[in-house]
Length: 378
View (cartoon, rainbow, N blue to C red):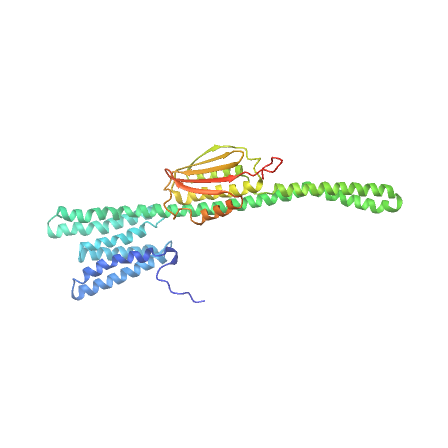
């Protein structure tokens, strides 16, 4: 199947197109040139655009460095032989230098960019034998500093994105390991609890067949004993199925503590520790919601600390997750579809959810505890 043409990789969204706005400045300056110099200038700008596109498609590949070197070479020529204002094109290679994962290659690229940006200024001073005025320094220097610092910000942002991907991958691996361990446990429990019982029933059924003609009374007693044994086996199966429930709240709290600390977010828990009287279904729903909230803290909040509190009363359970991150604003909260999923889950147990700001985001869940006439929670 023939691939459709794409100007830039789709995973980058509109970002590459927004950057193209800055190409208008060199084009404007080239209109002031004339003759061959102008034609060569437009040719280099066109080649610059080609390098800009190819850099997005060659990320992580060897030719990425070649395209970046060509781009910096064009910036160097335009700044040196046309006008110092072309130095602002250095923001383009500065962005791509931040994509280097190898620290040594990153610093080499940064040194090259520094030379490309500084040398034309030194050459201009030597050529004219005059230093820049204060107004000119105010015009160029702040942007030059921002340009040379920006690769560090890009690199930090990319590293954070990689860590989030690694965290998601690690969480999926943990889930698979938990499922695998659960399957092994179920198989072991089935063998230990039902294997011997079924073997016993097989032997007794063979015995009943032999006794039917010889000793009917004993055959009847053996058959009665088989019924008792089969009922015991059925009870074992029911107990085993009951034990195959989802993780409890206590188990989820242990898991989110590990997740938060793995990414450098400090964790604190306060409140009740005994959830044995909470029905399994309610524990399942609340546990999933707490896990979803903790995952969103890791992904979106930029927090350094997260606290969880769960308090039980005779009528309700109150869960509060508080982080010291960016918080939320208006209706466009940082949790997106994850929050909607929690609301839908809590609706199954008549629970409610509230999200607010107080030195970060505060997520509060209220779940009613309904009791039967006998006093047991449901």
